Length: 360
Picture 1 (tube, helix red, strand yellow):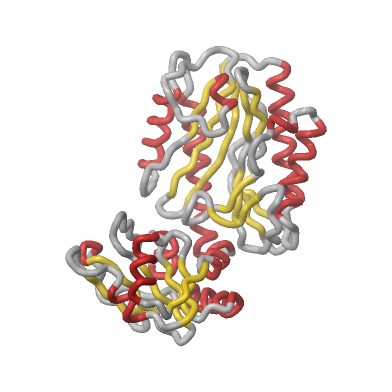
Picture 2: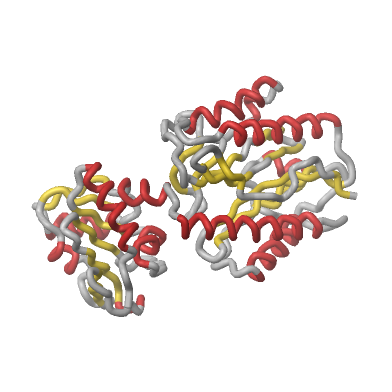
Protein backbone atom coordinates (compact mmCIF):
# COMPACT_ATOMS: atom_id res chain seq x y z
CA UNK A 1 0.00 0.00 0.00
CA UNK A 2 1.15 3.53 -0.80
CA UNK A 3 0.36 6.11 1.83
CA UNK A 4 0.28 9.88 1.75
CA UNK A 5 2.67 11.57 4.19
CA UNK A 6 -0.12 13.41 5.98
CA UNK A 7 1.90 16.02 7.87
CA UNK A 8 3.83 17.02 4.75
CA UNK A 9 0.65 17.08 2.64
CA UNK A 10 -0.97 19.33 5.26
CA UNK A 11 1.95 21.75 5.02
CA UNK A 12 1.75 21.71 1.22
CA UNK A 13 -1.96 22.52 1.35
CA UNK A 14 -1.25 25.37 3.73
CA UNK A 15 1.21 26.78 1.19
CA UNK A 16 -1.36 26.23 -1.57
CA UNK A 17 -3.75 28.50 0.32
CA UNK A 18 -1.06 31.15 0.66
CA UNK A 19 -0.38 30.92 -3.08
CA UNK A 20 -4.07 31.10 -3.98
CA UNK A 21 -4.09 27.58 -5.46
CA UNK A 22 -6.94 25.14 -4.89
CA UNK A 23 -5.35 22.28 -6.87
CA UNK A 24 -1.86 21.30 -8.04
CA UNK A 25 -0.05 18.56 -9.98
CA UNK A 26 3.22 17.35 -8.44
CA UNK A 27 5.25 15.56 -11.12
CA UNK A 28 8.92 15.68 -10.08
CA UNK A 29 10.34 12.35 -8.85
CA UNK A 30 11.82 13.65 -5.59
CA UNK A 31 8.72 15.72 -4.77
CA UNK A 32 6.43 12.73 -5.33
CA UNK A 33 8.75 10.72 -3.07
CA UNK A 34 8.62 13.47 -0.44
CA UNK A 35 4.83 13.12 -0.25
CA UNK A 36 4.36 9.38 -0.83
CA UNK A 37 7.62 7.56 -0.05
CA UNK A 38 7.62 6.09 -3.57
CA UNK A 39 10.65 6.75 -5.81
CA UNK A 40 9.82 6.51 -9.51
CA UNK A 41 11.94 7.72 -12.42
CA UNK A 42 9.29 7.93 -15.17
CA UNK A 43 11.59 8.73 -18.10
CA UNK A 44 9.22 9.49 -21.00
CA UNK A 45 6.19 8.08 -19.20
CA UNK A 46 3.58 9.86 -17.11
CA UNK A 47 3.87 10.41 -13.34
CA UNK A 48 1.77 12.94 -11.43
CA UNK A 49 0.33 13.42 -7.96
CA UNK A 50 -2.84 15.53 -7.78
CA UNK A 51 -3.66 17.41 -4.57
CA UNK A 52 -6.55 19.75 -3.86
CA UNK A 53 -7.76 21.69 -0.85
CA UNK A 54 -10.70 19.33 -0.33
CA UNK A 55 -8.33 16.56 0.71
CA UNK A 56 -8.20 14.62 -2.54
CA UNK A 57 -4.90 12.97 -3.40
CA UNK A 58 -4.54 10.93 -6.60
CA UNK A 59 -1.31 9.37 -7.87
CA UNK A 60 -1.24 8.73 -11.63
CA UNK A 61 1.31 6.38 -13.15
CA UNK A 62 2.12 3.72 -15.71
CA UNK A 63 1.52 0.01 -15.05
CA UNK A 64 5.25 -0.51 -15.52
CA UNK A 65 5.91 1.42 -12.30
CA UNK A 66 4.37 -1.44 -10.29
CA UNK A 67 2.29 0.86 -8.10
CA UNK A 68 0.35 -0.98 -5.38
CA UNK A 69 -3.02 0.27 -4.21
CA UNK A 70 -3.14 3.57 -2.40
CA UNK A 71 -4.20 3.74 1.23
CA UNK A 72 -6.99 6.32 1.76
CA UNK A 73 -6.97 9.22 1.31
CA UNK A 74 -4.48 8.40 -1.48
CA UNK A 75 -5.88 6.86 -4.66
CA UNK A 76 -3.66 5.27 -7.36
CA UNK A 77 -4.73 5.25 -11.00
CA UNK A 78 -2.63 3.55 -13.65
CA UNK A 79 -2.56 3.21 -17.43
CA UNK A 80 -0.52 1.18 -19.89
CA UNK A 81 1.63 2.16 -22.84
CA UNK A 82 -1.29 1.95 -25.29
CA UNK A 83 -3.55 4.23 -23.20
CA UNK A 84 -3.74 8.00 -23.29
CA UNK A 85 -1.46 8.91 -20.34
CA UNK A 86 -3.30 12.18 -19.63
CA UNK A 87 -6.89 10.91 -19.85
CA UNK A 88 -7.30 10.13 -16.14
CA UNK A 89 -5.79 13.47 -15.15
CA UNK A 90 -8.12 15.31 -17.52
CA UNK A 91 -11.07 13.52 -15.92
CA UNK A 92 -9.92 14.41 -12.39
CA UNK A 93 -8.88 18.07 -12.39
CA UNK A 94 -11.43 20.80 -11.88
CA UNK A 95 -12.08 23.87 -14.03
CA UNK A 96 -10.08 26.99 -13.29
CA UNK A 97 -6.51 27.49 -12.09
CA UNK A 98 -4.32 24.39 -11.81
CA UNK A 99 -0.82 24.68 -10.37
CA UNK A 100 1.67 22.84 -12.58
CA UNK A 101 5.00 21.50 -11.37
CA UNK A 102 7.84 23.19 -13.27
CA UNK A 103 9.25 19.79 -14.24
CA UNK A 104 6.18 18.43 -16.06
CA UNK A 105 7.02 17.73 -19.75
CA UNK A 106 5.28 20.09 -22.14
CA UNK A 107 3.90 17.17 -24.19
CA UNK A 108 1.75 16.16 -21.21
CA UNK A 109 0.75 19.72 -20.33
CA UNK A 110 -0.24 20.54 -23.92
CA UNK A 111 -2.31 17.35 -24.12
CA UNK A 112 -4.15 18.32 -20.93
CA UNK A 113 -4.80 21.85 -22.22
CA UNK A 114 -6.26 20.42 -25.41
CA UNK A 115 -8.58 18.07 -23.51
CA UNK A 116 -9.55 20.61 -20.84
CA UNK A 117 -9.69 24.15 -22.24
CA UNK A 118 -11.55 25.16 -19.08
CA UNK A 119 -8.39 24.54 -17.02
CA UNK A 120 -5.92 27.41 -16.61
CA UNK A 121 -2.37 26.13 -15.98
CA UNK A 122 -0.31 28.36 -13.69
CA UNK A 123 3.09 27.92 -11.99
CA UNK A 124 2.55 25.51 -9.11
CA UNK A 125 5.92 24.35 -7.81
CA UNK A 126 6.09 26.77 -4.89
CA UNK A 127 3.88 24.90 -2.37
CA UNK A 128 6.06 21.77 -2.44
CA UNK A 129 9.35 23.64 -2.92
CA UNK A 130 8.73 25.85 0.10
CA UNK A 131 7.87 22.87 2.28
CA UNK A 132 10.88 20.89 1.12
CA UNK A 133 13.08 23.91 1.86
CA UNK A 134 12.30 23.56 5.59
CA UNK A 135 13.39 20.06 6.58
CA UNK A 136 11.48 18.09 9.21
CA UNK A 137 13.14 16.01 11.94
CA UNK A 138 13.26 12.85 9.84
CA UNK A 139 14.98 14.68 6.98
CA UNK A 140 17.45 16.45 9.25
CA UNK A 141 18.56 13.15 10.74
CA UNK A 142 18.99 11.67 7.26
CA UNK A 143 21.11 14.64 6.18
CA UNK A 144 23.24 14.44 9.32
CA UNK A 145 23.90 10.77 8.70
CA UNK A 146 24.75 11.33 5.02
CA UNK A 147 27.26 14.05 5.93
CA UNK A 148 28.79 11.86 8.61
CA UNK A 149 29.40 9.18 5.98
CA UNK A 150 30.74 11.83 3.62
CA UNK A 151 33.37 12.77 6.19
CA UNK A 152 34.55 9.16 6.03
CA UNK A 153 34.61 9.17 2.23
CA UNK A 154 36.62 12.41 2.19
CA UNK A 155 39.18 10.93 4.55
CA UNK A 156 39.52 7.90 2.26
CA UNK A 157 39.78 10.09 -0.84
CA UNK A 158 42.59 12.21 0.61
CA UNK A 159 44.38 9.05 1.76
CA UNK A 160 44.09 7.53 -1.71
CA UNK A 161 46.08 10.29 -3.45
CA UNK A 162 49.50 9.09 -4.57
CA UNK A 163 52.18 9.77 -7.14
CA UNK A 164 51.04 9.00 -10.69
CA UNK A 165 47.32 8.70 -9.89
CA UNK A 166 44.84 10.29 -12.31
CA UNK A 167 41.68 12.26 -11.70
CA UNK A 168 39.61 9.44 -13.26
CA UNK A 169 41.17 6.83 -10.97
CA UNK A 170 40.51 9.01 -7.93
CA UNK A 171 36.88 9.55 -8.92
CA UNK A 172 36.36 5.80 -9.48
CA UNK A 173 37.79 5.07 -6.04
CA UNK A 174 35.53 7.65 -4.42
CA UNK A 175 32.46 6.21 -6.15
CA UNK A 176 33.33 2.78 -4.74
CA UNK A 177 33.53 4.30 -1.25
CA UNK A 178 30.02 5.70 -1.66
CA UNK A 179 28.61 2.41 -2.91
CA UNK A 180 30.03 0.66 0.17
CA UNK A 181 27.99 3.09 2.27
CA UNK A 182 24.69 2.54 0.48
CA UNK A 183 24.62 5.41 -2.01
CA UNK A 184 21.52 4.97 -4.16
CA UNK A 185 22.93 6.21 -7.45
CA UNK A 186 26.00 7.83 -8.93
CA UNK A 187 25.96 11.39 -10.11
CA UNK A 188 29.30 13.05 -11.03
CA UNK A 189 32.10 13.91 -8.71
CA UNK A 190 34.69 16.66 -9.02
CA UNK A 191 38.27 15.48 -8.57
CA UNK A 192 40.60 18.10 -10.05
CA UNK A 193 44.38 18.42 -10.07
CA UNK A 194 46.53 21.52 -10.66
CA UNK A 195 45.28 23.87 -13.42
CA UNK A 196 42.07 21.81 -13.73
CA UNK A 197 41.12 23.14 -10.28
CA UNK A 198 40.52 26.54 -11.88
CA UNK A 199 37.40 25.06 -13.55
CA UNK A 200 34.75 24.91 -10.80
CA UNK A 201 32.84 22.10 -12.57
CA UNK A 202 35.74 20.21 -14.13
CA UNK A 203 34.96 16.59 -15.06
CA UNK A 204 37.65 14.09 -14.04
CA UNK A 205 39.95 13.09 -16.89
CA UNK A 206 43.35 11.43 -17.26
CA UNK A 207 45.31 14.31 -15.75
CA UNK A 208 48.10 12.95 -13.54
CA UNK A 209 48.81 14.31 -10.06
CA UNK A 210 52.07 16.28 -9.99
CA UNK A 211 54.14 17.90 -7.21
CA UNK A 212 52.87 21.35 -6.30
CA UNK A 213 49.30 20.64 -7.52
CA UNK A 214 46.26 21.82 -5.66
CA UNK A 215 43.65 19.06 -5.44
CA UNK A 216 39.96 19.98 -5.30
CA UNK A 217 37.74 17.15 -4.05
CA UNK A 218 34.05 18.08 -4.34
CA UNK A 219 32.30 14.93 -3.16
CA UNK A 220 28.54 14.51 -3.34
CA UNK A 221 26.07 11.65 -3.62
CA UNK A 222 22.68 10.61 -2.13
CA UNK A 223 22.99 8.16 0.79
CA UNK A 224 20.56 6.57 0.24
CA UNK A 225 18.10 9.30 -0.85
CA UNK A 226 19.31 12.43 0.94
CA UNK A 227 22.39 14.12 -0.43
CA UNK A 228 25.73 14.93 1.10
CA UNK A 229 28.05 17.53 -0.45
CA UNK A 230 31.45 18.72 0.76
CA UNK A 231 34.57 20.19 -0.84
CA UNK A 232 38.10 20.22 0.48
CA UNK A 233 41.28 21.43 -1.22
CA UNK A 234 44.63 19.87 -0.38
CA UNK A 235 48.13 20.22 -1.90
CA UNK A 236 50.45 17.53 -3.19
CA UNK A 237 54.00 17.57 -1.72
CA UNK A 238 54.51 21.37 -1.73
CA UNK A 239 52.47 24.54 -1.45
CA UNK A 240 53.54 27.87 -2.99
CA UNK A 241 53.08 31.17 -1.10
CA UNK A 242 50.19 32.31 -3.34
CA UNK A 243 48.50 28.93 -3.01
CA UNK A 244 48.64 29.24 0.76
CA UNK A 245 47.33 32.83 0.61
CA UNK A 246 44.43 31.79 -1.58
CA UNK A 247 43.65 28.79 0.62
CA UNK A 248 43.70 30.87 3.80
CA UNK A 249 41.41 33.45 2.14
CA UNK A 250 38.86 30.88 0.97
CA UNK A 251 38.80 29.08 4.29
CA UNK A 252 38.35 32.38 6.14
CA UNK A 253 35.46 33.31 3.82
CA UNK A 254 33.81 29.96 4.47
CA UNK A 255 34.14 30.27 8.23
CA UNK A 256 33.12 33.93 8.32
CA UNK A 257 29.86 33.19 6.51
CA UNK A 258 29.10 30.20 8.73
CA UNK A 259 29.71 32.22 11.88
CA UNK A 260 26.99 34.71 10.88
CA UNK A 261 24.21 32.29 9.88
CA UNK A 262 21.09 32.45 12.03
CA UNK A 263 17.32 32.65 11.47
CA UNK A 264 16.01 35.87 9.95
CA UNK A 265 18.90 36.68 7.57
CA UNK A 266 18.52 37.28 3.86
CA UNK A 267 20.55 34.73 1.96
CA UNK A 268 22.29 37.50 0.04
CA UNK A 269 23.75 38.77 3.33
CA UNK A 270 25.53 35.44 3.81
CA UNK A 271 26.95 35.56 0.30
CA UNK A 272 28.07 39.16 0.82
CA UNK A 273 29.94 38.24 4.03
CA UNK A 274 32.08 35.66 2.24
CA UNK A 275 32.43 37.59 -1.02
CA UNK A 276 33.57 40.82 0.65
CA UNK A 277 36.44 39.02 2.37
CA UNK A 278 37.60 37.55 -0.95
CA UNK A 279 37.27 40.95 -2.63
CA UNK A 280 39.31 42.61 0.11
CA UNK A 281 42.09 40.07 -0.54
CA UNK A 282 42.14 41.12 -4.21
CA UNK A 283 40.45 38.04 -5.68
CA UNK A 284 36.88 39.26 -6.20
CA UNK A 285 36.76 38.56 -9.97
CA UNK A 286 38.10 35.05 -9.36
CA UNK A 287 35.11 34.07 -7.19
CA UNK A 288 32.90 33.22 -10.14
CA UNK A 289 29.81 31.51 -8.68
CA UNK A 290 27.18 31.90 -5.98
CA UNK A 291 28.10 31.01 -2.42
CA UNK A 292 25.90 27.93 -2.32
CA UNK A 293 22.64 26.09 -2.85
CA UNK A 294 19.98 24.27 -0.92
CA UNK A 295 20.23 20.50 -0.59
CA UNK A 296 18.01 17.60 0.42
CA UNK A 297 16.37 15.04 -1.84
CA UNK A 298 18.07 16.92 -4.69
CA UNK A 299 21.67 18.05 -4.70
CA UNK A 300 20.56 21.51 -5.88
CA UNK A 301 17.23 22.79 -4.58
CA UNK A 302 15.91 25.94 -2.85
CA UNK A 303 17.08 28.09 -1.19
CA UNK A 304 19.48 29.90 -3.50
CA UNK A 305 22.50 31.12 -1.50
CA UNK A 306 23.58 33.99 -3.75
CA UNK A 307 24.14 37.74 -4.04
CA UNK A 308 20.59 38.31 -5.27
CA UNK A 309 18.62 35.88 -3.07
CA UNK A 310 16.00 37.62 -0.94
CA UNK A 311 15.04 34.35 0.78
CA UNK A 312 15.07 34.72 4.57
CA UNK A 313 16.70 31.94 6.57
CA UNK A 314 14.47 29.78 8.76
CA UNK A 315 15.17 26.87 11.10
CA UNK A 316 15.29 23.62 9.14
CA UNK A 317 16.92 25.03 6.02
CA UNK A 318 20.00 23.17 4.78
CA UNK A 319 22.36 24.71 2.25
CA UNK A 320 26.00 24.81 1.20
CA UNK A 321 28.61 27.46 1.95
CA UNK A 322 31.30 27.03 -0.72
CA UNK A 323 33.43 30.05 -1.58
CA UNK A 324 36.19 29.56 -4.14
CA UNK A 325 38.99 31.33 -5.96
CA UNK A 326 39.98 30.16 -9.44
CA UNK A 327 43.13 31.26 -11.28
CA UNK A 328 42.96 29.96 -14.88
CA UNK A 329 46.04 28.08 -16.03
CA UNK A 330 47.40 27.87 -12.51
CA UNK A 331 45.22 26.44 -9.71
CA UNK A 332 41.98 26.82 -7.79
CA UNK A 333 40.69 26.43 -4.25
CA UNK A 334 37.20 25.73 -2.88
CA UNK A 335 36.09 24.90 0.67
CA UNK A 336 32.51 23.75 1.16
CA UNK A 337 30.35 22.70 4.09
CA UNK A 338 26.66 21.97 4.49
CA UNK A 339 24.93 23.94 7.23
CA UNK A 340 21.61 23.49 9.00
CA UNK A 341 19.86 26.62 10.26
CA UNK A 342 18.86 26.08 13.89
CA UNK A 343 16.69 28.13 16.24
CA UNK A 344 19.69 30.16 17.41
CA UNK A 345 22.35 29.87 14.69
CA UNK A 346 23.59 27.08 12.48
CA UNK A 347 24.99 23.58 12.72
CA UNK A 348 27.81 22.64 10.34
CA UNK A 349 27.03 19.10 9.17
CA UNK A 350 30.59 18.30 8.04
CA UNK A 351 33.42 17.67 10.49
CA UNK A 352 36.33 16.79 8.17
CA UNK A 353 39.32 19.05 8.86
CA UNK A 354 39.81 22.40 7.10
CA UNK A 355 43.36 23.21 8.10
CA UNK A 356 45.91 23.45 5.27
CA UNK A 357 47.04 19.96 4.24
CA UNK A 358 50.24 19.43 2.26
CA UNK A 359 50.39 15.72 1.49
CA UNK A 360 53.82 14.11 1.36
